Image 1 (cartoon, helix red, strand yellow):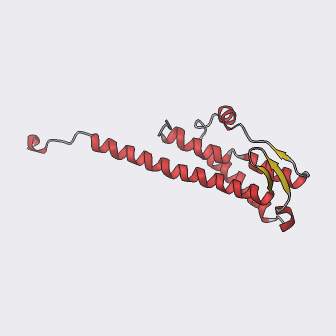
Image 2 (cartoon, one colour):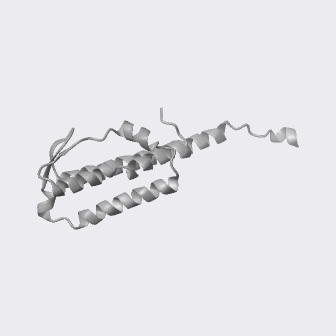
Image 3 (cartoon, rainbow, N blue to C red):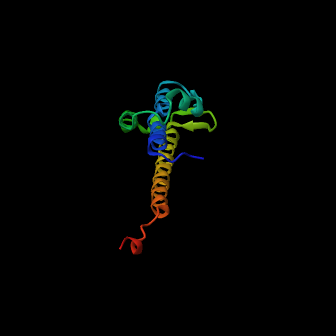
Length: 142
């Protein structure tokens, strides 16, 4: 079960987004190499190594912004020919650079949707706590 605390889970989601430098590396390799093999990232090992969920939220968001700023800076300069450069992405097979960019966008959108769900869960738990709180017996206090 996903823990529903701001301190752990929200930071974990954003940490995963910001730490997704593998996407940046894949873009660079596809531009620099002829049909490179792009291995999948062991996300469980990465989460352990980076201690997801324990980082400072401000630092995590700054890392995410910087990673996407660097990616957008490269993507903005790509030519149509570069977008068609081939690679082989482990688990996906033959892809183009354009497809890798689509996968990166999809990855971010999935995590952002997960954040929306998690915020709803946290709000629901807060509401549930309020509902379960004993209400004062106004008749006895008069």
